[in-house]
Length: 175
Image (cartoon, rainbow, N blue to C red):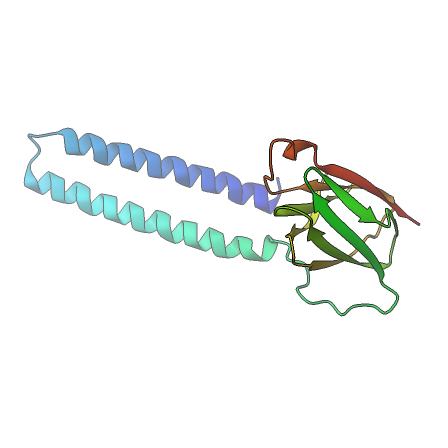
């Protein structure tokens, strides 16, 4: 199991412990004949458990930050980059050109004719590589270098109407 999988399992255990603690507190609140001393003791134990779980959750959150892949925010643009113009419309994409060279930096220039869309680029294995907003009267840019040839897909990641689910197009990355 990967480190991320182990941490995910640990998070699940913590959530179960929180639910159990909540149920114990709820059950204790239903008892009317409980003495003040027992209620105070239970309250201290509950506070300790909540503190322990909060510390563990915070530590696990901090541990997972280095595992998250953040692409470079500002990579210098190559002089020999390929520019791909992408225009979104309900319910499709106009991609020019539809063929991209592998290993060459690609600058996607993205806009929309009508409403907001979310352009997501998916590799042949089904992994989301990057995303960028497509908005009317505004141009967004995304820079990416495709390392391996294949058929890639652009999908809409922002609900844009009834036929949103069919808003896909493919393009080729060639050697």
